[in-house]
Image (cartoon, rainbow over all chains, first blue to last red):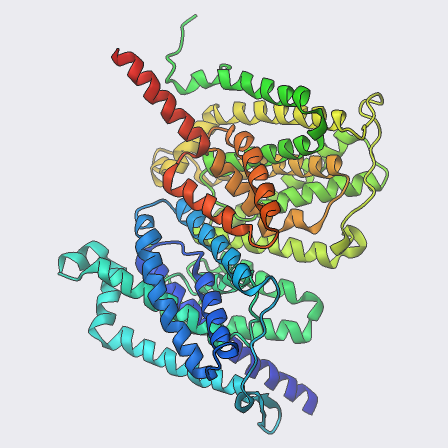
Length: 293
Length: 328
Protein backbone atom coordinates (compact mmCIF):
# COMPACT_ATOMS: atom_id res chain seq x y z
CA UNK A 1 0.00 0.00 0.00
CA UNK A 2 2.73 2.37 1.02
CA UNK A 3 4.65 1.26 -2.04
CA UNK A 4 1.75 2.15 -4.30
CA UNK A 5 1.27 5.48 -2.62
CA UNK A 6 4.90 6.30 -3.03
CA UNK A 7 4.94 5.37 -6.69
CA UNK A 8 1.87 7.49 -7.31
CA UNK A 9 3.57 10.35 -5.47
CA UNK A 10 6.69 9.74 -7.52
CA UNK A 11 4.76 9.82 -10.77
CA UNK A 12 2.97 13.00 -9.86
CA UNK A 13 6.03 14.84 -8.53
CA UNK A 14 8.35 13.84 -11.34
CA UNK A 15 5.61 14.12 -13.93
CA UNK A 16 4.72 17.61 -12.82
CA UNK A 17 8.29 18.89 -12.83
CA UNK A 18 8.84 17.30 -16.25
CA UNK A 19 5.55 18.68 -17.52
CA UNK A 20 6.29 22.19 -16.34
CA UNK A 21 9.59 22.28 -18.20
CA UNK A 22 7.75 21.10 -21.30
CA UNK A 23 5.18 23.83 -20.61
CA UNK A 24 7.86 26.53 -20.59
CA UNK A 25 9.21 25.40 -23.94
CA UNK A 26 5.71 24.87 -25.33
CA UNK A 27 4.48 28.32 -24.30
CA UNK A 28 7.40 29.77 -26.21
CA UNK A 29 6.34 27.79 -29.26
CA UNK A 30 2.67 28.66 -28.91
CA UNK A 31 3.51 32.33 -28.71
CA UNK A 32 5.68 32.29 -31.82
CA UNK A 33 3.41 30.01 -33.84
CA UNK A 34 0.21 31.67 -32.70
CA UNK A 35 1.39 35.16 -33.53
CA UNK A 36 3.47 34.56 -36.60
CA UNK A 37 1.56 31.64 -38.10
CA UNK A 38 4.85 30.00 -38.89
CA UNK A 39 5.22 26.28 -38.39
CA UNK A 40 8.34 26.69 -36.35
CA UNK A 41 10.12 23.34 -36.22
CA UNK A 42 13.36 25.05 -35.17
CA UNK A 43 12.03 25.77 -31.70
CA UNK A 44 13.70 22.69 -30.25
CA UNK A 45 17.01 23.99 -31.54
CA UNK A 46 16.70 27.12 -29.39
CA UNK A 47 15.96 24.97 -26.36
CA UNK A 48 19.01 22.84 -27.13
CA UNK A 49 21.26 25.87 -27.60
CA UNK A 50 20.01 27.27 -24.28
CA UNK A 51 20.77 24.02 -22.50
CA UNK A 52 24.22 23.65 -24.02
CA UNK A 53 25.13 27.27 -23.36
CA UNK A 54 24.10 27.22 -19.73
CA UNK A 55 25.83 23.90 -19.09
CA UNK A 56 28.92 25.22 -20.85
CA UNK A 57 28.87 28.36 -18.71
CA UNK A 58 28.59 26.20 -15.61
CA UNK A 59 31.19 23.60 -16.47
CA UNK A 60 33.74 25.73 -18.27
CA UNK A 61 32.98 29.20 -16.89
CA UNK A 62 32.33 28.13 -13.32
CA UNK A 63 29.08 30.10 -13.23
CA UNK A 64 26.48 29.10 -10.64
CA UNK A 65 23.50 27.20 -12.07
CA UNK A 66 20.79 29.88 -11.73
CA UNK A 67 22.99 32.58 -13.22
CA UNK A 68 24.04 30.33 -16.10
CA UNK A 69 20.41 29.52 -16.91
CA UNK A 70 19.51 33.18 -16.93
CA UNK A 71 22.50 34.23 -19.01
CA UNK A 72 21.92 31.46 -21.56
CA UNK A 73 18.25 32.40 -21.96
CA UNK A 74 19.09 36.04 -22.54
CA UNK A 75 21.83 35.24 -25.04
CA UNK A 76 19.53 32.90 -26.99
CA UNK A 77 16.73 35.49 -26.94
CA UNK A 78 19.05 38.10 -28.47
CA UNK A 79 20.48 35.61 -30.93
CA UNK A 80 17.00 34.59 -32.03
CA UNK A 81 16.23 38.16 -33.12
CA UNK A 82 19.04 37.86 -35.63
CA UNK A 83 17.67 34.50 -36.82
CA UNK A 84 14.19 35.98 -37.12
CA UNK A 85 15.45 38.91 -39.19
CA UNK A 86 17.55 36.63 -41.40
CA UNK A 87 15.16 33.73 -42.03
CA UNK A 88 11.72 34.01 -40.49
CA UNK A 89 10.79 37.35 -42.03
CA UNK A 90 10.71 35.56 -45.32
CA UNK A 91 8.48 32.79 -43.97
CA UNK A 92 5.55 34.93 -42.83
CA UNK A 93 3.99 34.88 -46.26
CA UNK A 94 5.41 31.55 -47.42
CA UNK A 95 3.33 28.36 -47.72
CA UNK A 96 3.47 25.86 -44.92
CA UNK A 97 5.71 23.44 -46.77
CA UNK A 98 8.44 26.05 -47.07
CA UNK A 99 8.12 26.91 -43.39
CA UNK A 100 8.52 23.25 -42.47
CA UNK A 101 11.49 22.79 -44.78
CA UNK A 102 13.37 25.90 -43.79
CA UNK A 103 12.92 25.34 -40.08
CA UNK A 104 13.97 21.69 -40.46
CA UNK A 105 17.02 23.07 -42.26
CA UNK A 106 17.73 25.32 -39.27
CA UNK A 107 17.41 22.26 -37.01
CA UNK A 108 19.93 20.37 -39.11
CA UNK A 109 22.34 23.29 -38.95
CA UNK A 110 21.91 23.52 -35.18
CA UNK A 111 22.51 19.79 -34.80
CA UNK A 112 25.64 20.01 -36.94
CA UNK A 113 26.91 23.03 -35.02
CA UNK A 114 26.21 21.46 -31.62
CA UNK A 115 28.06 18.32 -32.66
CA UNK A 116 30.93 20.47 -33.85
CA UNK A 117 31.24 22.41 -30.60
CA UNK A 118 30.25 19.82 -28.01
CA UNK A 119 30.83 16.43 -29.60
CA UNK A 120 28.38 13.73 -30.66
CA UNK A 121 27.75 12.27 -27.20
CA UNK A 122 25.49 13.27 -24.34
CA UNK A 123 26.78 16.43 -22.68
CA UNK A 124 26.12 15.89 -18.97
CA UNK A 125 24.80 18.71 -16.82
CA UNK A 126 26.12 18.44 -13.27
CA UNK A 127 23.74 19.59 -10.55
CA UNK A 128 25.14 21.90 -7.90
CA UNK A 129 25.29 20.19 -4.50
CA UNK A 130 22.54 22.33 -3.00
CA UNK A 131 20.08 21.09 -5.65
CA UNK A 132 21.23 17.48 -5.80
CA UNK A 133 20.17 16.76 -2.23
CA UNK A 134 16.99 14.82 -1.56
CA UNK A 135 14.11 16.09 0.52
CA UNK A 136 11.80 13.68 2.29
CA UNK A 137 8.17 14.59 1.77
CA UNK A 138 6.83 11.84 3.99
CA UNK A 139 5.62 9.36 1.40
CA UNK A 140 8.31 9.96 -1.17
CA UNK A 141 11.65 11.68 -1.15
CA UNK A 142 12.41 13.95 -4.06
CA UNK A 143 15.44 15.71 -5.36
CA UNK A 144 15.48 19.35 -4.37
CA UNK A 145 16.20 20.21 -8.00
CA UNK A 146 12.77 18.92 -9.04
CA UNK A 147 11.05 21.07 -6.45
CA UNK A 148 13.09 24.09 -7.54
CA UNK A 149 12.08 23.45 -11.16
CA UNK A 150 8.42 23.34 -10.15
CA UNK A 151 8.68 26.57 -8.17
CA UNK A 152 10.61 28.48 -10.83
CA UNK A 153 8.39 27.30 -13.67
CA UNK A 154 5.22 28.20 -11.82
CA UNK A 155 6.65 31.62 -11.07
CA UNK A 156 7.53 32.22 -14.70
CA UNK A 157 4.19 30.93 -15.93
CA UNK A 158 2.44 33.28 -13.51
CA UNK A 159 4.55 36.18 -14.74
CA UNK A 160 3.73 35.29 -18.34
CA UNK A 161 0.05 35.08 -17.55
CA UNK A 162 0.26 38.52 -15.96
CA UNK A 163 2.05 39.88 -18.99
CA UNK A 164 -0.41 38.44 -21.51
CA UNK A 165 -3.54 39.29 -19.56
CA UNK A 166 -2.75 42.50 -17.76
CA UNK A 167 -0.18 44.58 -19.63
CA UNK A 168 -0.38 46.70 -22.75
CA UNK A 169 2.26 44.57 -24.42
CA UNK A 170 0.16 41.50 -23.76
CA UNK A 171 -2.91 43.19 -25.17
CA UNK A 172 -0.95 44.17 -28.26
CA UNK A 173 0.25 40.62 -28.72
CA UNK A 174 -3.25 39.23 -28.33
CA UNK A 175 -4.58 41.80 -30.75
CA UNK A 176 -1.95 40.89 -33.33
CA UNK A 177 -2.69 37.17 -32.88
CA UNK A 178 -6.38 37.71 -33.50
CA UNK A 179 -6.10 40.07 -36.42
CA UNK A 180 -2.76 41.20 -37.69
CA UNK A 181 -3.98 43.74 -40.22
CA UNK A 182 -6.38 45.35 -37.80
CA UNK A 183 -3.70 45.52 -35.10
CA UNK A 184 -1.35 47.17 -37.54
CA UNK A 185 -3.88 49.74 -38.56
CA UNK A 186 -4.46 50.76 -34.96
CA UNK A 187 -0.83 51.78 -34.85
CA UNK A 188 0.80 48.73 -33.32
CA UNK A 189 4.22 48.17 -34.84
CA UNK A 190 3.59 44.55 -35.72
CA UNK A 191 6.95 43.78 -37.22
CA UNK A 192 8.74 45.02 -34.11
CA UNK A 193 6.25 43.06 -32.04
CA UNK A 194 7.14 39.96 -34.06
CA UNK A 195 10.82 40.30 -33.27
CA UNK A 196 10.07 40.90 -29.64
CA UNK A 197 7.70 37.95 -29.37
CA UNK A 198 10.07 35.71 -31.25
CA UNK A 199 12.83 36.65 -28.81
CA UNK A 200 10.46 35.96 -25.92
CA UNK A 201 9.43 32.59 -27.34
CA UNK A 202 12.96 31.47 -28.12
CA UNK A 203 14.16 32.79 -24.78
CA UNK A 204 11.50 30.67 -23.08
CA UNK A 205 12.65 27.67 -25.08
CA UNK A 206 16.23 28.31 -23.97
CA UNK A 207 15.08 28.74 -20.39
CA UNK A 208 13.25 25.42 -20.51
CA UNK A 209 16.21 23.75 -22.16
CA UNK A 210 18.67 25.16 -19.61
CA UNK A 211 16.51 24.63 -16.56
CA UNK A 212 15.51 21.16 -17.68
CA UNK A 213 18.96 20.05 -18.89
CA UNK A 214 19.54 17.74 -15.90
CA UNK A 215 16.19 16.10 -16.76
CA UNK A 216 16.21 16.15 -20.55
CA UNK A 217 19.81 15.18 -21.29
CA UNK A 218 21.61 17.32 -23.85
CA UNK A 219 22.61 15.59 -27.05
CA UNK A 220 23.00 16.83 -30.59
CA UNK A 221 19.66 15.31 -31.65
CA UNK A 222 17.89 17.18 -28.86
CA UNK A 223 16.26 19.64 -31.30
CA UNK A 224 14.23 16.84 -32.89
CA UNK A 225 13.83 14.57 -29.91
CA UNK A 226 12.11 17.03 -27.64
CA UNK A 227 10.58 19.12 -30.37
CA UNK A 228 8.20 16.23 -31.00
CA UNK A 229 7.11 16.17 -27.37
CA UNK A 230 6.67 19.92 -27.32
CA UNK A 231 4.77 19.90 -30.58
CA UNK A 232 2.49 17.23 -29.17
CA UNK A 233 1.76 19.55 -26.25
CA UNK A 234 1.10 22.43 -28.62
CA UNK A 235 -1.06 20.35 -30.93
CA UNK A 236 -3.13 18.98 -28.07
CA UNK A 237 -3.61 22.39 -26.54
CA UNK A 238 -5.09 23.71 -29.73
CA UNK A 239 -2.39 25.85 -31.36
CA UNK A 240 -2.10 29.31 -30.00
CA UNK A 241 -3.88 28.74 -26.74
CA UNK A 242 -1.47 29.67 -23.97
CA UNK A 243 -3.75 28.76 -21.10
CA UNK A 244 -4.41 25.17 -22.01
CA UNK A 245 -0.73 24.54 -22.69
CA UNK A 246 0.05 24.21 -19.01
CA UNK A 247 -2.72 21.66 -18.48
CA UNK A 248 -1.73 19.59 -21.49
CA UNK A 249 1.96 19.78 -20.63
CA UNK A 250 1.26 18.47 -17.14
CA UNK A 251 -0.83 15.66 -18.61
CA UNK A 252 1.93 14.75 -21.06
CA UNK A 253 4.56 14.93 -18.32
CA UNK A 254 2.60 12.64 -16.04
CA UNK A 255 1.69 10.18 -18.80
CA UNK A 256 5.33 9.98 -19.87
CA UNK A 257 6.57 9.45 -16.33
CA UNK A 258 3.84 6.94 -15.52
CA UNK A 259 4.54 5.10 -18.76
CA UNK A 260 8.24 4.84 -18.00
CA UNK A 261 7.63 3.60 -14.49
CA UNK A 262 4.61 1.34 -14.90
CA UNK A 263 4.94 0.01 -18.44
CA UNK A 264 8.61 0.38 -19.30
CA UNK A 265 8.16 -1.87 -22.32
CA UNK A 266 5.44 0.37 -23.70
CA UNK A 267 6.94 3.72 -22.78
CA UNK A 268 7.67 4.60 -26.38
CA UNK A 269 4.04 4.14 -27.37
CA UNK A 270 2.14 5.90 -24.65
CA UNK A 271 2.74 9.44 -25.68
CA UNK A 272 2.09 8.86 -29.36
CA UNK A 273 -1.07 6.91 -28.63
CA UNK A 274 -2.23 9.81 -26.48
CA UNK A 275 -1.44 12.17 -29.34
CA UNK A 276 -3.23 10.21 -32.03
CA UNK A 277 -6.31 9.40 -29.99
CA UNK A 278 -6.72 12.94 -28.69
CA UNK A 279 -5.95 14.59 -32.02
CA UNK A 280 -8.57 12.56 -33.82
CA UNK A 281 -11.07 12.77 -31.02
CA UNK A 282 -10.72 16.49 -30.35
CA UNK A 283 -8.95 18.16 -33.16
CA UNK A 284 -9.30 21.66 -31.74
CA UNK A 285 -7.39 20.65 -28.66
CA UNK A 286 -8.12 19.71 -25.11
CA UNK A 287 -9.53 22.25 -22.69
CA UNK A 288 -10.64 24.36 -25.61
CA UNK A 289 -14.26 25.22 -26.12
CA UNK A 290 -15.05 24.53 -29.72
CA UNK A 291 -15.54 27.50 -31.90
CA UNK A 292 -18.88 27.74 -33.63
CA UNK A 293 -18.52 26.67 -37.22
CA UNK B 1 -8.63 13.70 -84.96
CA UNK B 2 -8.79 16.94 -83.11
CA UNK B 3 -5.48 17.98 -81.70
CA UNK B 4 -5.52 19.22 -78.17
CA UNK B 5 -3.79 22.46 -77.28
CA UNK B 6 -0.56 21.91 -75.39
CA UNK B 7 -1.87 23.69 -72.39
CA UNK B 8 -4.87 21.39 -72.01
CA UNK B 9 -4.78 19.14 -69.03
CA UNK B 10 -5.80 16.18 -71.16
CA UNK B 11 -2.73 16.60 -73.35
CA UNK B 12 -0.74 15.30 -70.41
CA UNK B 13 -1.63 11.77 -71.49
CA UNK B 14 0.84 12.15 -74.33
CA UNK B 15 4.44 11.13 -74.02
CA UNK B 16 6.79 13.99 -73.38
CA UNK B 17 10.46 14.35 -74.05
CA UNK B 18 11.04 14.01 -70.33
CA UNK B 19 9.34 10.61 -70.31
CA UNK B 20 11.77 9.36 -72.90
CA UNK B 21 14.64 10.81 -70.88
CA UNK B 22 13.29 8.90 -67.90
CA UNK B 23 13.75 5.67 -69.85
CA UNK B 24 17.07 6.56 -71.38
CA UNK B 25 19.00 8.13 -68.50
CA UNK B 26 18.89 5.17 -66.08
CA UNK B 27 19.76 2.81 -68.92
CA UNK B 28 22.71 5.04 -69.80
CA UNK B 29 23.74 4.95 -66.17
CA UNK B 30 23.46 1.17 -66.33
CA UNK B 31 25.80 1.00 -69.30
CA UNK B 32 28.24 3.68 -68.16
CA UNK B 33 28.67 2.83 -64.48
CA UNK B 34 28.49 -0.97 -64.22
CA UNK B 35 30.43 -0.80 -60.96
CA UNK B 36 27.88 1.31 -59.17
CA UNK B 37 24.76 -0.72 -59.86
CA UNK B 38 24.10 -1.40 -56.18
CA UNK B 39 24.13 2.34 -55.50
CA UNK B 40 22.09 2.84 -58.65
CA UNK B 41 19.36 0.49 -57.45
CA UNK B 42 19.28 2.38 -54.17
CA UNK B 43 18.83 5.65 -56.04
CA UNK B 44 16.02 4.16 -58.12
CA UNK B 45 14.27 2.86 -55.02
CA UNK B 46 14.36 6.30 -53.45
CA UNK B 47 13.28 7.89 -56.72
CA UNK B 48 10.22 5.65 -56.65
CA UNK B 49 9.62 6.45 -52.99
CA UNK B 50 9.86 10.16 -53.74
CA UNK B 51 7.51 9.70 -56.70
CA UNK B 52 4.90 8.13 -54.43
CA UNK B 53 5.38 11.02 -52.02
CA UNK B 54 5.00 13.47 -54.90
CA UNK B 55 1.51 12.11 -55.54
CA UNK B 56 0.69 12.90 -51.92
CA UNK B 57 2.43 16.23 -51.48
CA UNK B 58 2.78 17.61 -54.97
CA UNK B 59 -0.65 16.68 -56.27
CA UNK B 60 -2.93 16.22 -53.27
CA UNK B 61 -1.12 18.80 -51.16
CA UNK B 62 -0.99 16.51 -48.12
CA UNK B 63 2.10 17.17 -46.04
CA UNK B 64 3.02 14.06 -44.08
CA UNK B 65 6.17 13.45 -42.10
CA UNK B 66 5.33 9.81 -41.61
CA UNK B 67 5.52 8.43 -45.11
CA UNK B 68 8.42 6.23 -44.03
CA UNK B 69 5.79 4.16 -42.22
CA UNK B 70 4.66 2.68 -45.54
CA UNK B 71 8.17 2.36 -46.89
CA UNK B 72 8.98 0.44 -43.73
CA UNK B 73 5.89 -1.75 -43.81
CA UNK B 74 6.68 -2.61 -47.41
CA UNK B 75 10.30 -3.38 -46.62
CA UNK B 76 9.52 -5.59 -43.62
CA UNK B 77 6.71 -7.40 -45.43
CA UNK B 78 8.84 -8.23 -48.44
CA UNK B 79 11.74 -9.22 -46.20
CA UNK B 80 9.63 -11.45 -43.98
CA UNK B 81 7.87 -13.07 -46.93
CA UNK B 82 11.21 -13.95 -48.49
CA UNK B 83 12.57 -15.32 -45.23
CA UNK B 84 9.39 -17.32 -44.63
CA UNK B 85 10.04 -19.06 -47.92
CA UNK B 86 7.82 -17.13 -50.28
CA UNK B 87 10.81 -15.95 -52.22
CA UNK B 88 9.31 -15.06 -55.56
CA UNK B 89 10.27 -11.40 -55.93
CA UNK B 90 7.30 -9.95 -57.79
CA UNK B 91 4.76 -11.60 -55.52
CA UNK B 92 6.71 -10.27 -52.57
CA UNK B 93 6.37 -6.72 -53.85
CA UNK B 94 2.69 -7.19 -54.57
CA UNK B 95 2.09 -8.60 -51.11
CA UNK B 96 3.87 -5.65 -49.53
CA UNK B 97 1.93 -3.18 -51.65
CA UNK B 98 -1.35 -4.82 -50.72
CA UNK B 99 -0.62 -4.65 -47.01
CA UNK B 100 0.38 -0.99 -47.29
CA UNK B 101 -2.82 -0.21 -49.15
CA UNK B 102 -4.84 -1.93 -46.43
CA UNK B 103 -3.07 -0.10 -43.60
CA UNK B 104 -3.36 3.22 -45.40
CA UNK B 105 -7.02 2.55 -46.13
CA UNK B 106 -7.71 2.05 -42.45
CA UNK B 107 -5.67 5.05 -41.29
CA UNK B 108 -6.56 7.56 -43.99
CA UNK B 109 -10.18 8.34 -43.04
CA UNK B 110 -8.97 9.36 -39.59
CA UNK B 111 -5.77 11.11 -40.60
CA UNK B 112 -7.10 13.17 -43.47
CA UNK B 113 -9.73 14.94 -41.43
CA UNK B 114 -6.77 16.87 -40.10
CA UNK B 115 -4.79 19.43 -42.05
CA UNK B 116 -1.65 21.43 -41.56
CA UNK B 117 0.45 20.95 -38.48
CA UNK B 118 -1.93 18.57 -36.66
CA UNK B 119 -1.72 16.26 -39.67
CA UNK B 120 2.07 16.52 -39.69
CA UNK B 121 2.17 15.69 -35.99
CA UNK B 122 -0.19 12.74 -36.21
CA UNK B 123 1.73 11.25 -39.13
CA UNK B 124 4.93 11.64 -37.13
CA UNK B 125 3.17 9.93 -34.23
CA UNK B 126 1.95 7.09 -36.43
CA UNK B 127 5.36 6.31 -37.84
CA UNK B 128 6.97 6.65 -34.40
CA UNK B 129 4.57 4.06 -32.99
CA UNK B 130 5.40 1.71 -35.85
CA UNK B 131 9.12 2.25 -35.24
CA UNK B 132 8.67 1.46 -31.54
CA UNK B 133 6.58 -1.60 -32.40
CA UNK B 134 9.20 -2.88 -34.84
CA UNK B 135 11.86 -2.25 -32.22
CA UNK B 136 9.95 -4.16 -29.55
CA UNK B 137 8.86 -7.05 -31.78
CA UNK B 138 12.42 -8.21 -32.23
CA UNK B 139 11.31 -11.85 -32.60
CA UNK B 140 9.71 -10.76 -35.86
CA UNK B 141 11.79 -7.88 -37.14
CA UNK B 142 15.16 -8.59 -35.57
CA UNK B 143 14.87 -5.33 -33.63
CA UNK B 144 18.05 -3.30 -33.60
CA UNK B 145 19.99 -5.96 -35.49
CA UNK B 146 17.63 -5.83 -38.43
CA UNK B 147 16.33 -8.48 -40.77
CA UNK B 148 19.02 -10.59 -42.40
CA UNK B 149 19.15 -13.35 -44.95
CA UNK B 150 16.63 -12.17 -47.53
CA UNK B 151 17.17 -14.49 -50.49
CA UNK B 152 15.12 -14.60 -53.64
CA UNK B 153 14.44 -17.17 -56.28
CA UNK B 154 15.77 -16.22 -59.72
CA UNK B 155 13.44 -13.80 -61.47
CA UNK B 156 10.98 -15.66 -63.75
CA UNK B 157 12.99 -18.73 -62.79
CA UNK B 158 15.66 -17.55 -65.18
CA UNK B 159 17.58 -14.43 -64.12
CA UNK B 160 19.71 -15.02 -61.06
CA UNK B 161 20.35 -12.16 -58.63
CA UNK B 162 24.00 -11.61 -59.44
CA UNK B 163 26.46 -10.03 -57.03
CA UNK B 164 27.23 -7.22 -59.46
CA UNK B 165 23.58 -6.23 -59.37
CA UNK B 166 22.50 -6.15 -63.04
CA UNK B 167 19.27 -8.02 -62.32
CA UNK B 168 18.54 -5.88 -59.28
CA UNK B 169 19.06 -2.66 -61.18
CA UNK B 170 16.92 -3.61 -64.16
CA UNK B 171 14.26 -5.16 -61.94
CA UNK B 172 14.03 -1.96 -59.84
CA UNK B 173 14.04 0.13 -62.97
CA UNK B 174 11.15 -1.90 -64.40
CA UNK B 175 9.13 -1.31 -61.26
CA UNK B 176 9.95 2.38 -61.40
CA UNK B 177 8.73 2.63 -65.00
CA UNK B 178 5.51 0.72 -64.33
CA UNK B 179 4.82 2.84 -61.24
CA UNK B 180 5.59 6.03 -63.11
CA UNK B 181 3.10 5.29 -65.88
CA UNK B 182 0.40 4.23 -63.44
CA UNK B 183 0.85 7.33 -61.26
CA UNK B 184 1.07 9.61 -64.26
CA UNK B 185 -2.07 8.13 -65.74
CA UNK B 186 -3.77 8.73 -62.40
CA UNK B 187 -2.70 12.34 -61.95
CA UNK B 188 -3.63 13.33 -65.49
CA UNK B 189 -7.05 11.73 -65.23
CA UNK B 190 -10.08 13.78 -64.14
CA UNK B 191 -9.45 12.33 -60.69
CA UNK B 192 -5.94 13.76 -60.68
CA UNK B 193 -7.18 17.13 -61.86
CA UNK B 194 -9.74 17.18 -59.06
CA UNK B 195 -6.95 16.34 -56.67
CA UNK B 196 -4.97 19.35 -57.81
CA UNK B 197 -8.08 21.47 -57.44
CA UNK B 198 -8.36 20.32 -53.85
CA UNK B 199 -4.72 21.18 -53.28
CA UNK B 200 -5.28 24.70 -54.57
CA UNK B 201 -8.56 25.40 -52.81
CA UNK B 202 -10.40 22.64 -51.06
CA UNK B 203 -13.43 24.66 -49.99
CA UNK B 204 -14.02 25.84 -53.54
CA UNK B 205 -13.84 22.25 -54.76
CA UNK B 206 -16.35 21.29 -52.11
CA UNK B 207 -18.68 24.08 -53.22
CA UNK B 208 -18.41 22.86 -56.79
CA UNK B 209 -19.82 19.54 -55.66
CA UNK B 210 -16.66 17.48 -55.34
CA UNK B 211 -16.25 15.18 -52.41
CA UNK B 212 -12.96 16.20 -50.88
CA UNK B 213 -12.23 13.51 -48.31
CA UNK B 214 -12.74 10.46 -50.61
CA UNK B 215 -10.38 11.98 -53.18
CA UNK B 216 -7.74 12.56 -50.55
CA UNK B 217 -8.19 9.06 -49.13
CA UNK B 218 -7.70 7.46 -52.53
CA UNK B 219 -4.61 9.58 -53.17
CA UNK B 220 -3.23 8.61 -49.77
CA UNK B 221 -3.86 4.91 -50.32
CA UNK B 222 -2.31 4.89 -53.79
CA UNK B 223 0.67 6.86 -52.54
CA UNK B 224 1.11 4.47 -49.61
CA UNK B 225 0.87 1.50 -51.99
CA UNK B 226 3.72 2.76 -54.13
CA UNK B 227 5.73 3.69 -51.05
CA UNK B 228 5.25 0.05 -50.06
CA UNK B 229 6.50 -1.06 -53.47
CA UNK B 230 9.58 1.10 -52.96
CA UNK B 231 10.09 -0.36 -49.48
CA UNK B 232 9.75 -3.90 -50.78
CA UNK B 233 12.30 -3.20 -53.48
CA UNK B 234 14.60 -1.73 -50.83
CA UNK B 235 14.43 -5.01 -48.89
CA UNK B 236 14.84 -7.18 -51.98
CA UNK B 237 17.73 -5.29 -53.55
CA UNK B 238 19.51 -4.54 -50.29
CA UNK B 239 18.98 -7.96 -48.76
CA UNK B 240 18.65 -6.33 -45.36
CA UNK B 241 16.01 -4.32 -43.50
CA UNK B 242 16.98 -2.17 -40.51
CA UNK B 243 14.87 -0.07 -38.19
CA UNK B 244 16.03 3.01 -40.06
CA UNK B 245 13.44 2.43 -42.79
CA UNK B 246 10.71 3.46 -40.36
CA UNK B 247 12.47 6.43 -38.80
CA UNK B 248 11.64 10.10 -39.05
CA UNK B 249 14.95 10.57 -40.85
CA UNK B 250 13.67 8.51 -43.75
CA UNK B 251 10.52 10.64 -43.99
CA UNK B 252 12.61 13.79 -43.92
CA UNK B 253 15.05 12.34 -46.46
CA UNK B 254 12.31 11.66 -48.97
CA UNK B 255 10.80 15.09 -48.41
CA UNK B 256 14.13 16.79 -49.01
CA UNK B 257 14.81 14.69 -52.11
CA UNK B 258 11.45 15.58 -53.58
CA UNK B 259 11.71 19.28 -52.86
CA UNK B 260 15.28 19.35 -54.09
CA UNK B 261 14.23 17.77 -57.36
CA UNK B 262 10.98 19.70 -57.73
CA UNK B 263 7.41 19.12 -56.62
CA UNK B 264 4.44 18.11 -58.66
CA UNK B 265 6.04 16.68 -61.78
CA UNK B 266 6.76 13.08 -60.71
CA UNK B 267 10.29 13.52 -62.07
CA UNK B 268 11.41 15.41 -59.01
CA UNK B 269 12.47 12.33 -57.12
CA UNK B 270 14.41 11.04 -60.09
CA UNK B 271 16.59 14.13 -59.98
CA UNK B 272 16.44 14.78 -56.26
CA UNK B 273 17.24 11.24 -55.11
CA UNK B 274 20.66 10.94 -56.78
CA UNK B 275 21.61 14.55 -56.02
CA UNK B 276 20.61 14.26 -52.38
CA UNK B 277 22.13 10.82 -51.85
CA UNK B 278 25.39 11.87 -53.46
CA UNK B 279 25.43 15.14 -51.52
CA UNK B 280 24.68 13.35 -48.26
CA UNK B 281 27.31 10.75 -48.97
CA UNK B 282 29.83 13.47 -49.73
CA UNK B 283 28.95 15.47 -46.61
CA UNK B 284 29.14 12.36 -44.45
CA UNK B 285 32.52 11.51 -45.88
CA UNK B 286 33.71 15.04 -45.27
CA UNK B 287 32.75 14.68 -41.67
CA UNK B 288 30.77 11.82 -40.15
CA UNK B 289 29.61 13.98 -37.24
CA UNK B 290 28.50 17.37 -38.43
CA UNK B 291 27.46 16.56 -41.96
CA UNK B 292 23.91 17.59 -41.03
CA UNK B 293 25.17 21.13 -41.06
CA UNK B 294 25.65 20.91 -44.82
CA UNK B 295 22.33 19.19 -45.45
CA UNK B 296 20.59 21.91 -43.45
CA UNK B 297 22.34 24.61 -45.42
CA UNK B 298 21.36 22.88 -48.67
CA UNK B 299 17.75 22.76 -47.54
CA UNK B 300 17.69 26.46 -46.73
CA UNK B 301 19.29 27.37 -50.02
CA UNK B 302 16.71 25.33 -51.93
CA UNK B 303 13.79 26.91 -50.09
CA UNK B 304 15.14 30.44 -50.31
CA UNK B 305 16.45 30.53 -53.82
CA UNK B 306 14.74 27.91 -55.89
CA UNK B 307 11.13 27.29 -55.08
CA UNK B 308 10.68 24.70 -57.79
CA UNK B 309 13.79 22.72 -56.90
CA UNK B 310 16.26 21.71 -59.60
CA UNK B 311 13.44 21.07 -62.09
CA UNK B 312 12.12 24.55 -61.42
CA UNK B 313 15.54 26.01 -62.14
CA UNK B 314 15.75 24.10 -65.41
CA UNK B 315 12.25 25.13 -66.40
CA UNK B 316 12.74 28.80 -65.66
CA UNK B 317 16.02 28.90 -67.54
CA UNK B 318 14.42 27.10 -70.49
CA UNK B 319 11.54 29.57 -70.62
CA UNK B 320 13.98 32.46 -70.31
CA UNK B 321 16.01 31.03 -73.16
CA UNK B 322 12.93 30.37 -75.28
CA UNK B 323 11.62 33.86 -74.53
CA UNK B 324 14.85 35.43 -75.70
CA UNK B 325 14.67 33.41 -78.92
CA UNK B 326 11.17 34.60 -79.61
CA UNK B 327 12.16 38.22 -79.18
CA UNK B 328 14.70 37.87 -81.93
